[in-house]
Amino acid sequence: MEDIFVGRLMSSPVETVSPDTEVHVAAEKMIDERIGSVLVTDDEGQLAGILTATDFVHIAAEQRWAADATVETYMTTDVTTTTANAEIRDVADTMIEQGFHHMPVVDETEGVVGIITTTDITAYMSHVQTPSPS
Image 1 (cartoon, helix red, strand yellow):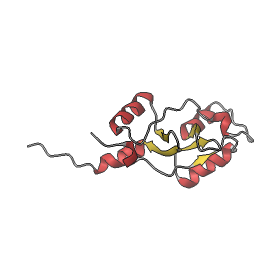
Image 2: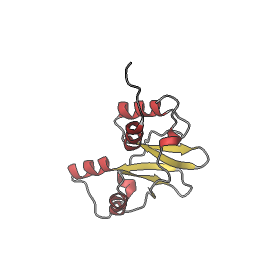
Image 3: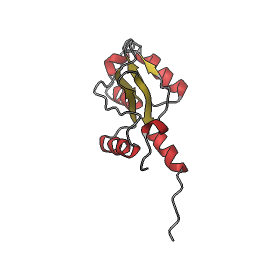
Image 4: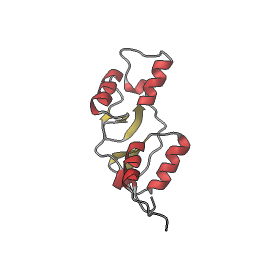
């Protein structure tokens, strides 16, 4: 995975919601799109947070669901991000160390430009040919 950059493997465009989106609407979007997270962005497209399937598991386990709750209530705001120019090995290491399955890809001026997921990395790795031992 040397010299493979996030921009080559990331998914883009990404599904986003605003902080005031009702949680059930975000959940329906995740189900409809068959994705494990939605990025929460402000009016300028800047990252405000992330809401993942794991967040929904915690919400259900703690029985703290509110029918009219918004994404802002449950989203993670302390989000680790990367850039399209980051090496995939470094990002994969961070994801493993932190237990992340999704990492937003951001640009200083454009805001959110994509997302890199364990699925993206696995899909790439499944197509990499390794030389047979001689």
